[in-house]
Image (cartoon, rainbow, N blue to C red; front, top):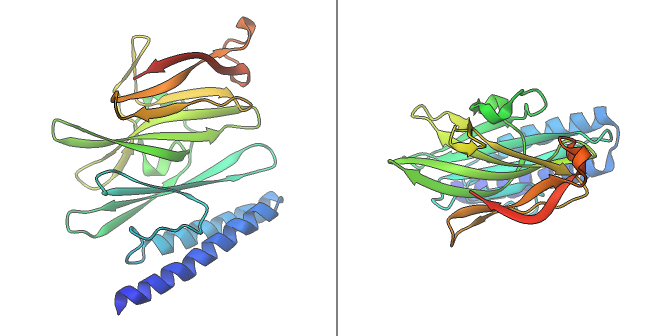
Length: 240
């Protein structure tokens, strides 16, 4: 049957994906790494285009996989860290259409190039790269949006967590960021928290309270204001 065939090729491809991930871990040379990262990106893209890929668990492939509670979108993310402390982020989004076909969109990480990301709505080709670890479904006035929580390392010293909003326009295009966050009297399209990579910051969705709860970050000494490698949780909490 067609289904059995696609399951076989999905598991074959998954083995290849897992192998490429293991290769990435072993190589330190940036040129090598980029070549493997590119093979990986192409292999994942081909694999996610196969029938049955939306439901396939991909347990052997060490990439982030998360499905929205309405079972309409599934997001895959991973990163490739380099010796200089930078990382490249990779992502794909599958969207289940009304006719049950799956539309696949590749995300292109432009987080190092985008200036003033707090203010922008970005297409998939200018994605503010991150590892997506939660999706919160929001419906208002008949429109569905997905609040994404994500983590990224900016370099050796600074990590960041981001609250982003994914919407799908009538043409099926993905958009990231929406001007709905009010911060100190200004409206922002996404929230970005930067802090010391030695610290851990909690940013979680609380179902009961219908809120995103997060650690309040502050500098370890007042003179470090604005220097994010010295920022960490100060044991107080904020909520959205």
